[in-house]
Length: 525
Figure 1 (cartoon, rainbow, N blue to C red):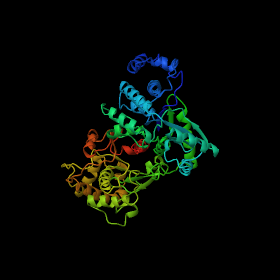
Figure 2 (spheres, one colour):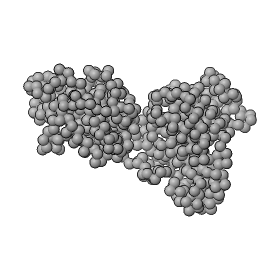
Figure 3 (cartoon, rainbow, N blue to C red):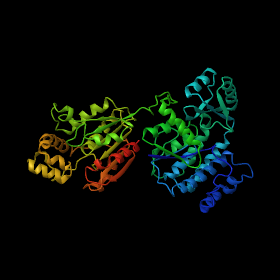
Figure 4 (cartoon, rainbow, N blue to C red):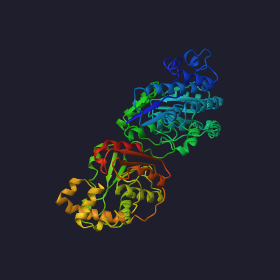
């Protein structure tokens, strides 16, 4: 999986965009018109020495990043995720389709102007020691007025605060032979001292309308995927909040990302290499700034819920592709390792059984639930109950059904009561079980009572009502499934983010697409 990264302020240089402006004359002209000066001249010649001034740096970098990404897409496919460091996050949102090029220029122009008005602060980058060591030095020295502004890598951290405090801290760090470099800035960006700027920019953002993201963007502010309804709050709050770059990269590694491509520079690439090295050595686990444990490197659990007739071994084909997860394959009574227990015939008994298994282990807002067919319906109802008890998963992935209920039709009534011959014919027509299983008489003698029990419990849910959930959902169906075109019905059952996909095949398309299913599970996070 691939992530595209956009650099932020500090990566600008005289001559940037040299090979881009003439290739994109319309975009260059539009940017110059909005900004009120010749952008090409600023970037290539910088005659008035303004390129390093915040109000000029930010729009210039945004435009160059945007043009460089256009050039990148000529020969590359779009990524699975987008991220940007501080200002670069605006390019990530542009690439995701949240706003257009013109709107992006207006946003970063205003952002740069507001941030440039902040005065009296300083910043410095500390190299070679951990964040905990930095905090200890600041605590012992009584530097209560200094904040952590950028968590760039496990051994590269930016501090910010009033100029006098930062200058004094630099002297103390140097006395301890700790490498620290003052940054050429006029304010304490990404700290509490930018609160007023954050509020002003948030008010400015409210006059714009934003579109839904086409590609997930991970936010600097919380190292979590953006949610559209929180976009203004997070973008505005980014200005006075630290950049959680290490957590962001760790979370993407955790999702299975193995390619990080930087647009227009190498600053972020070096940071990523340092973080990856720390991950491999196990040194990247740390507390976050609010004192909560950071689970970025702890494997997420994924709970796999069985389809009709299935047991804990039903998803064996997926396991080689879920190495980034701690897998929990669940099963209902009467099958697999629980074959000595009586079968359940009520959906709510089945749901209660699965709920008890998951609720004992789930890490709220961190672990994942996946289910196919019956497992998808169970997964939804279990998630609904988990949310009621503040144990909601980080995401829910469902496949093989267009909704978490069964719409009862004459063709589905009392399937569990059919004579064996008609029962087999019904299974074949429904595509609800691999044909090879049905043709094996010995296996079918074993599986038939389990299937009948599962159809009976499905029948029991047909008239039940369920409320909406907040957990993000990725729904997948096979292109040849009879109700494949109804997949969007999942929107009626969630108030959270929903993403729908179709993969080639019938009801058991999952057997032919294990890698893609695993990718979608990772993407759901």
